[in-house]
Length: 311
Ligand code: DON
Image (cartoon, rainbow, N blue to C red; front, side, top):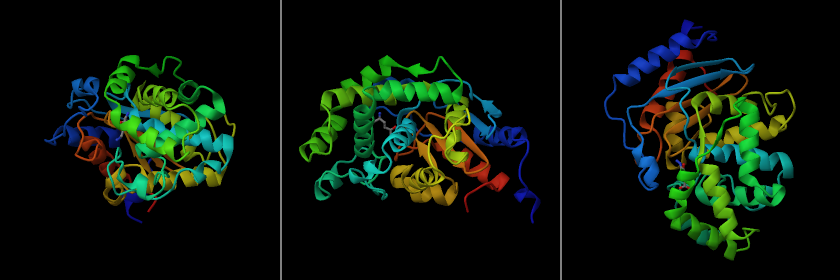
């Protein structure tokens, strides 16, 4: 076996090398500008964290700097709904890659108001609607879960980002109303949009999100040892992350990185090595599909250097 495929025990040298290579790479993309507050982010920022199954965290660069988690939160709302209602969610949302941008409307009419998967915006709105029905406070439930798993009691929403997105939220409103016309949204659309925009505005660091995703590497087991999901459910979420977590770039992400991953337009990406560790990388410059340029490059390098991959 090649030495590069031995299990890594100390991630620090790997992270240092990744940070140095990413810093030397020009062309970091551009921050999202459809939410005006996100456009202010500095594309030169870069952070990365790796969390072991026992909660040990290694980090480099801006790994403790909170950033806007955005669509990364969709993994956690999905997990919470599956933990509470078993598989009922899948009657209202599919599990196929969409091949379309994350905020696309085009497939919804052909497919009778059933979104392709839970990670495009339409699917995430269905998930948040179900979490709201199950808990009465979808975003609060999400925040409590993230605080518990990350061990960070200060983790919170950025109400300014939520307001900024709400003020420019016509497309998400259109998606939600359109699905409601098919009966695939159960609660009032304005309440759902409030919950969804707050959810997306979660501010968390690479360390927070790598730790919070740990249950996906621990086959469904939470940080305190309790069970959130069955082993099968954890596997299912990882599979949907691999096939749908980076939208119409999921094929390229699987090819380059080879891990289940989920991106957000704040420039963060989480990734899972089942049974081994979780990762989170952040750099605000995005490619045209809404994924962090430096983030994908860093994860690509991580799996190349360590040999840790699902393949
Ligand atoms: O729904 C939106 O437009 C955003 N709040 C979240 C989108 C997002 O992060 C998509 N990810 N790449």
